Image (cartoon, one colour):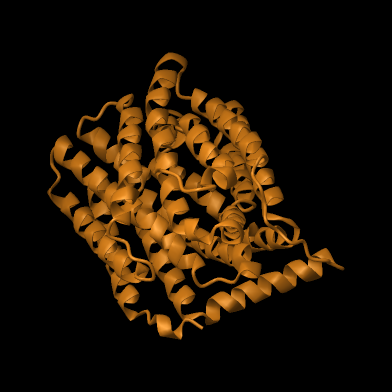
Amino acid sequence: MLFKKEELKILWPFYLDALISPMLFFAPAFFVIYFNNLGFNLFQIGLLLAVAPLFRLIFEVPTGAFADLYGRKLSVLLSTILGGIGFLALYFFTDFISLLIIFAFLGFSETFCSGAKEAWITDLIKNKRKELLHTYFVKYQSIDSIGLVVSGFIGALFVKFYGLSVIWLIGALSFIISTFLLSLGEEYFIKRKVKSVYFNLKKQTIEAINYTKNHHVLFYFLIISAILLFAESFSSILSWTPFLKNLGFPNYAFGYLWSALSFIGVVAPLIGSKFYKKNKERKFLTNSLIFSIITTLLIIFANNLIFALLIFVSFGFFDFVKRPVERVYFHRFIPSKLRASVGSVESMFLSLIGIIGYPIGGYLIDLIGPKYTIFLSGIIMIPAVLIYMKIREAKSV
C-alpha cells in the first residue's frame, strides 16, 4: 500500500503541492541558456546565482527564529508569495543591475521557507503519526520528482512556442499554486507569549547557533554540507550546460534532460530506502557519497555526449538517494523548539558557501573549461567522506 493509514488525511496538501507546483517550475533547466542569450558570461551568471545566498545569509537566522516564534505555516506562505513576485519581476527586467536586485529579493524570500517548512511538517508528523517521518521525506521527494518529470516536457513546449522568457511567468504561477495548496495544510504549533519581538528573535537565534556549534553531530554535518555545496558550485548547471552544449546537446533538449533527471529522482529514493536502516544514516550517507565521488571523477574520460549524459544521470541518482536520509539524520538531533531556527542556521552557513562558490565556479569554467571544473568538484568532495567517518554519535549530546 503506497500510503499508510491516515497519512493522506494529515499530509495531502503537502503531497499535492509536491506534485503540482513543480510541474510549472522548469526555469532552472534554462537558467544558463537564458542569461547567456542576454549576453552575460559564466562569471556574471555565477554572480547572479551568488546574490541569493548572500541575502539568505543576512536574513536566514532571524526569519528562522520568526517561524519558531510566530508560526512555520505563516512563514512558509510569506515565502511563496514573495517568491512569486520575484519571478514575475524577472520577466520584465533584463539588465544586470536589476537582475542582481531581484535575485537578492528572491534570496530574502527563501529565508522564510528554509528550515520553517521542514520544521512545520516534522512537528506535525511527530504529533500525529511519528512513524511516518522517514517515509514522508522519501515520498515527498519522489512525488516532487514526478512533477518535475512532467515539467521538463511542459518547459520544452513552452520555450519552443513562447520563447525563453516565459519560464519566469510560469514559475510565478507555480508559486501561486503552492501558496494556495500549502494554505490548506494543518499546523501543530504552540505560540509562545512574547514581550519583545527583537529580544525573542535575538535570544532564539543565539540559542540555535550555540546548540548547533556545540553539538558534535550537527557541527560535523554542517561542515560536510558546506564541502558538498562548494563542490556542487563547480558541477552545477553552470558547468554542465556549457559542457553538454560543447558536445552537441541542443538547447531545446535541456527540458527533456530535466525530465530524465527528475525521473531518476522518483525512483532513486525508493531504491535507496531498501538499503536504509533506521539509526544507520551515517553509514548510508558515507557509502552514497563515495559512489558520487567516483562517478564525478569519471568526467575526465567523457569525450562523447552519451558517456557524459550517463555520468550526469548517475551522479543525480546518488544525489537523490541520499537527500531524504540527510534530512532525517539532521532532524534526528534537533529539539522541536529549535527545529526551524537550527534549520536556518544550516541555511545561513551554506549560503556563505554559495556566495563564495558560484562566482569561483563561473570563473573557472571561463578559465579552464567545464570538464575540468566538474572534475575538481569530485576532488573537493573527498574530505566529506573522511569527516563522516570521524563522527561519533555517542557524543551527540
